[in-house]
Amino acid sequence: MADDSTATPVDQPSEDAQVTPEAPKPTDDVPPEVKAALRKANKEAETLRLRLKEFEDRDKSEAEKQAERLQALEAEATSARAEALRLRVAAKFGIGDEDADLFLTGTDEETLTKQAQRLSARDADRKKQGNHVPREGNPNPAPAGDDAQFARSLLGGGD
Image (cartoon, rainbow, N blue to C red; front, side, top):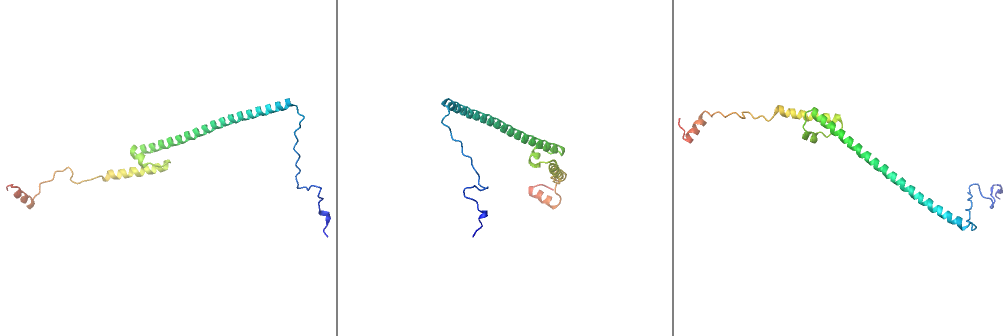
């Protein structure tokens, strides 16, 4: 037979069970003037709640607009700083605007300086070696020897 000392009586609630209080029942003995005033107050409260929400939304959207504007200005300032740095490095190494636009693509000073050094070194090498054509601009001396004599005889020149 089981020990009945641990059993809980059916009519007593256990400690884990939650007791929910009963909701108050509306009373019918409230005067109609009070009911009308209560309805009016609830309507006004709802109107005021909606107006408050409009003001909060308006302020929120203004704050969002300001945040977006701030973000755009920060991006513009960063871009301007990068452009100024690029032009400063280009001027330091004597690089023209077109070459700077095309070849100086770094975003920090170290990278831009390395790119500018490399570009100016290539330009200096090209100028040093240049496009050299020997005897360019010098008149060719008249050919001598048998070839010249053969040409004169063909063209009817005399000896």
